[in-house]
Image (cartoon, rainbow, N blue to C red):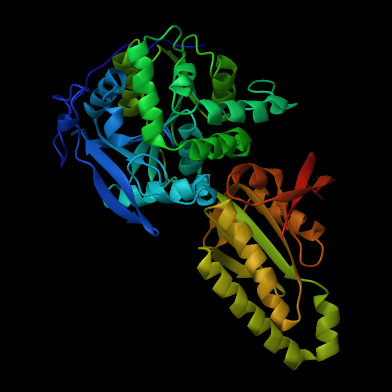
Amino acid sequence: MLARPQSSSLTSSAREHLPCSDLSGGDAVNTPKTRYVKSGDGHLAYQVCGEGPIDLVYLAAWASHLEENWKFPSFARLARSLASFSRLIVFDLRGTGLSDPVAISDMTSLERWMDETLVVLDAVGSERAALIGAGGGGHLAALFAATHPDRATALVLHRTAARFTSAPDYPWGLAPQLVPGYLDQVEREWGTGSWFARNLDLRGVQPEMREQLARLERYVSGPSTWWAAMRMALESDIRGVLSSIAVPTLVAHQVGDTFTPVEHSNYLSEHIPGARLVEVPPLLADPEAIAGAFAEFLTGAPQALPSDRVLATVLFTDIVDSTQRATAVGDRRWHEILDAYDAAAARALGEFRGRQVKTTGDGTLATFDGPARAIRCATALSDAVQELDLQIRAGLHTGEIETRGEDIAGIAVHVGQRISSLAGAGEVLVSRTVKDLVAGSGLAFTDRGSHALKGIPDEWQVYSVER
């Protein structure tokens, strides 16, 4: 049942910060100082505000312009309230707001956004932080909390969904056949204030407010960038991640929200272990009450316990026809070929930040903190071993694994191994979970149908990576 929280106001010991109490939300001079940190070949813009004992990252994904945000009273009031009990950290993703531009094809990736979050946390000296994911930022926050539980203390999901389009087993959201028309409308109207007006559920908005929203849209990004970001959001599906979230989680549903109806919030709270569901007022109506609900949860919730379970992408590879090849070339030559294969695997894993768990005689078991990197590693290795006159098959799955010293265990490991066994020579196969998490990364797939995996319940949809 939904509980309606009370507002609260909390303060604590000082840390390096900019006090937020004097920020009116209308004077750009009084906004927190914008700083930059190097990320890849560009820079991320970020701000830090507040003096509370906990670090709190507010993730609105691409809908942000650090300095323009503060000109909206509702955002300024929410940020001031959040900073009254935390050290609030906000930043613009690459390609949006004040951060450096990036190619559209490289911008829209949850994996890249996770990397950028880590860069900002390191820049401000935050070892662990609570995460608030609003709207599309909910996907980023949820995936980060599941993948990096050592850096996350708690998770708040506000006005978000496991997926934003409907499916046969998920009857809420935009119908898939309506997506192309919706994206065309978004691109055509971007910069007029229409998208933010619909998202914030503003009916009959005054002309001056509409122009303010229009300016914010233009400052956030250009139409093509926003079109790509919205397409990624509508293609993403984090349902396979939810059961792996081990940090305390609050799902906040906005009263009367037509953009993300309550069914989305119910689904999240039912599928994230131990998640709590609350109802909050609209942002424009009472930002302090929303911050109060978050404060009550974040300052009173139990701390996440150390865990040996984490979300990861598992990669299995093995050499095709290895027994016949070994017989043909003899033991000595086969040993040399395996040494060369192991060296190629080590180079590929190093390039794509994979961790080799172990070799399997004629293959490799490795884990990654990002599924797109895992796919690119598998395809790069497949290409590299052709110089050795070898072919490999590869299988990937993203799920919760258990670490046992240097080894790993869990259903996700078995799923990855079973998917690998379905692959043909030179083929990289992935589970549907992997495909859903790399939306916007530029990777393309061919549906290989539904398969029964030996010893694992249910049918599993499998996809081949297009080369």
